[in-house]
Amino acid sequence: MPEDIDAELAAIREKVSKEVTLLEAHIHECRVRVDSLRTTLRGLDEVLGLETDHPQGSEAVRRVASEADHWLTISEILEELVRRGWAPDSDKPEGAVRASAARLRAADCRWKMTEGRLVFSEDIDDETLMAMHDQARDELGEEDA
Image (cartoon, rainbow, N blue to C red; front, side):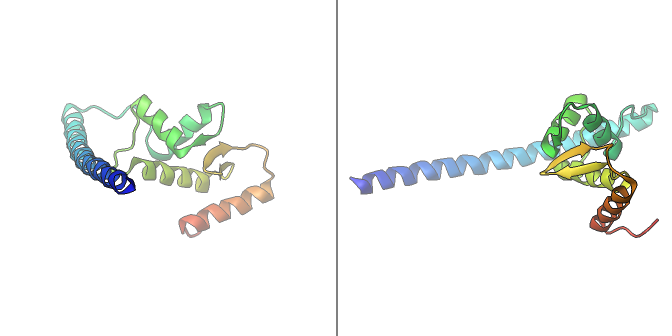
């Protein structure tokens, strides 16, 4: 009896594996299509003389995180950026948001990443602020400006 169950489970696993592969291929095709459409939109905006009327990069992350009533994860920030139509133009948007958050921290160390959540803290003394600033810049591999 266990052999029959093992064979049935193996067959189910094979079907699920094939479906995952098909869906991953479909997701890739969708991402390629979205990237193409974004490029078309940028081109049309340029021809029409339309300007981007929303913040991008670190400024978009700062606005979303500033308006939140709780600490936000990178995924939560990305969800809100998408909801507002401010999603980063990237094939790895979560990585783009993470990089923007890191740049935000390097520019103003009152922004902290704690347990994967971005938080703003005004209650930091100047010495701690400078040490955090130096640490954030070191993490980004930046030299003194």
